[in-house]
Image 1: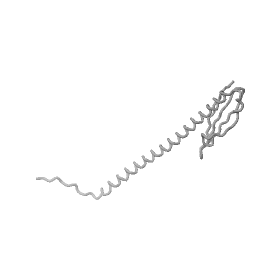
Image 2: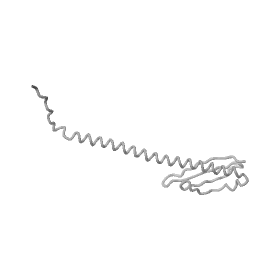
Image 3: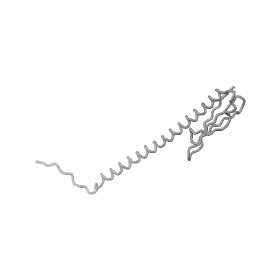
Image 4: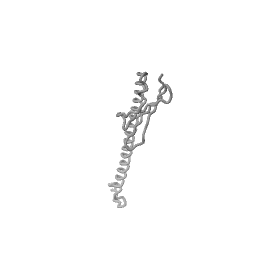
Length: 123
């Protein structure tokens, strides 16, 4: 009867499984770091888009108030601080008769200033 041969121990292969496991952990860790980086970038972009949407809403709200009170429209030509945005301001100027430019600006700490401008014609 013939017995199957048992593979012989090869000293050159010693520790290969450990190296393979360490490489797999390294690749997995790099993937996790990439996902965390994408998550942080997504959160920043989400807050930026929220601020842009808030700025558009504030500008449209100011224009709506101006349309609602055409007799007092010149009282709106000014700069006001707003609490809805970080370091926010809303500025209304009248470049021409019947034309009003509303600019909403804001600045997050440590970032560049942003602004949203819209133009309305009110007779």
